[in-house]
Image (cartoon, rainbow, N blue to C red):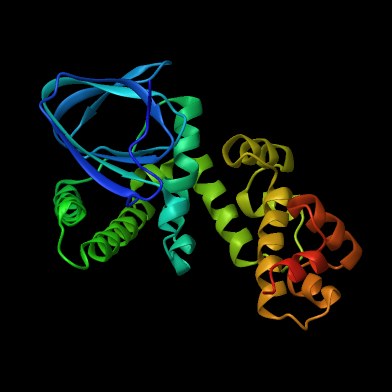
Length: 285
């Protein structure tokens, strides 16, 4: 079963509270689902396995991953449904927080591949804090008062920040060796994208062999470290081409970490379907 909660013109953030329900059938959806278990016990069901949930469990389900729930004892959870592309949250430097990258981007893919054998659980005070934030979000998303959507998104951003901060300091994150190391590499790439890098240098930073890093990175991120770096550089080049319309293409390439402007132009066309010059011309008006 595939669910769709958002219409094209709807607000792409919704908070649902499921309380004492017997079951939520296995389904999949095109939006992100952030799950916070606030009380009781239940089971999370996927086509591959079932596992127990209890108060304090928090995890992210990305689009296209079938799942459902079964109640065992006074089960209560919040589902925060959202479409990140439409919300377009200004993350600024939150992406530099290791816990943000690990929880929201890497951990869901590792969990999809290897199951829920170890997962993130909040302490009592952390659960109380996040539950209050989510309850306030729910109120604002259902309100009709002026400014309610702004307040809901502000609370959602605060929720992201708290999850990232708590996850960064969690024992699970520090003990999950692969998750921790990959998160550090991803953050390093994003913060130093203009610097000269090699797989060997990144592997040394991650205390992995180059082959192991490549394999883990492809499995979790979906591409090699160098392809990920090139995608970051091309995205930066797109911004620079528009922000500095008189800057020569060779200098755009250099400012984005490319030593060879011809290679940059070929890669840019491969990634975007047009040359840097054509991209600038098409988007200059």
